[in-house]
Amino acid sequence: MGMIIMCMASAASALAVGGLLLYIAYSAVTIKRNASRRWSTDTHIHYYFLNMMISHLILSIGELLNIKWIVEARLYPGTVCTIQGFLIQLGNVGVALSTMAVAVHVLQVLVLQWRSPPKLALLVLAIIWLLIFLLVVVPPIVVQHNIYGASGYWCFVDGSIMTQFLWMDTDFGGEGRTREQFRM
Image (cartoon, rainbow, N blue to C red; front, side, top):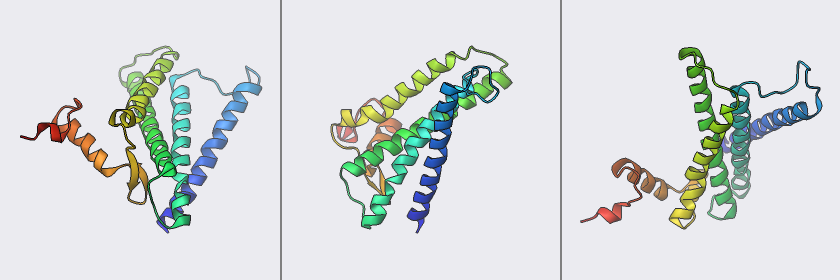
């Protein structure tokens, strides 16, 4: 029952965010320049919000793939599992980094009272997507096998790989060494 509720929430979220993104696209393209309801990118928050919504849509689509596991009443590795794990990882990291960008921007403006040009947000977004690439796309290439698999009720980073990444990061400074390389 919980998975069905999650799918319904993901569907509602995808519809809401997708509708908002469509309205923003429509507003940016068709509404006159000086209209009061036109979408603009006058501040950093506009860029970060748009990036957060795109990331959230990706996350919602990944979570909607749970429908397959509900219908089949089982979870197993395969193409759909890999795609779901990738989309959820991509969406999670994108939303988290976008949220951090908003928080840092608010700190910068309200506490530090430092103003930067809105175009600086484009550099921040480039850094966000570089980090997403390094955190989500590169690991399966480096490990050279599918890092996504069954993780409870849906597909995400495989538990054994997640443990290995956490082990390397916490004990060895994330320098790419594995536990086996340090056995005596």
